[in-house]
Amino acid sequence: MALGDATLAVKADVAFSDVVKEESGEDIRSCYYCQKCTAGCPTAYMMDYKPAQLLRMIQLGQREKVLASRAIWMCVGCEACGTRCPNEIRLAPVMDVLRQMALEEEHKPDTAVYSLHRAFLDSIRMWGRMHEVTMLAEFKSRCLLTEYPVFFQGLIGDIKMASDLVLNGKLSFVPDRIKRMDEIKALYREAAEVSSREEETEVSR
Image 1 (tube, one colour):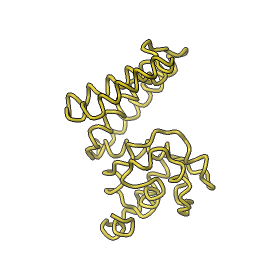
Image 2 (cartoon, rainbow, N blue to C red; image 1 turned 45 degrees about the vertical axis):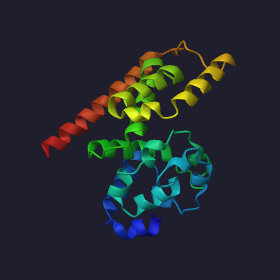
Image 3 (cartoon, helix red, strand yellow; image 1 turned 60 degrees about the vertical axis):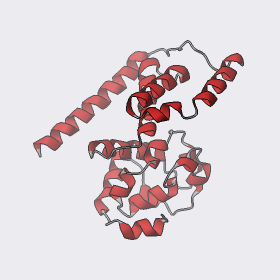
Image 4 (cartoon, rainbow, N blue to C red; image 1 turned 90 degrees about the horizontal axis):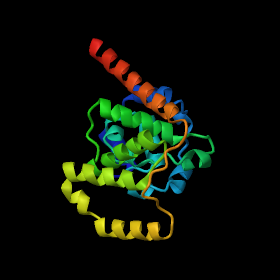
């Protein structure tokens, strides 16, 4: 579906853009659709809506389309978009806000994408950094439990690539935990407390 079609198909929620701007701290309304973020995004080819399109949809208040999209789960937070943007709009914090909103409003994400997202966060929580072997093992396990056909997709290729990386010293089976893990754990605790307070606020309303 073209962006114009999506514009006509969804009733605008003007307050949506205000919420995303406030929660992310990014001035999304300053985007004038130059598409430099899309051109530099390494995962744009896998998104149903490209980064620039997503920003435009937020500006237009297309809440349901945005929160139900696959795109918000494909961002890896590499900051290429913010580096290239002439107005210095960083999509990583925007995507974080959108993902949280999607979960709170019970928009079911793509199973495989969400499983990878959870595995990535668990890897950071456990080691303070991404450890590819344990992260991918958790990802495949989640897929096996929730959508088992995904477990077998690309499995042979993954095994071959992992073997090549290990043989060339690019991949370690032994996780290397960073120092000052207490700071990482504190961030996760703070995030959990904020989420809990927000849920209590919603219930009280």
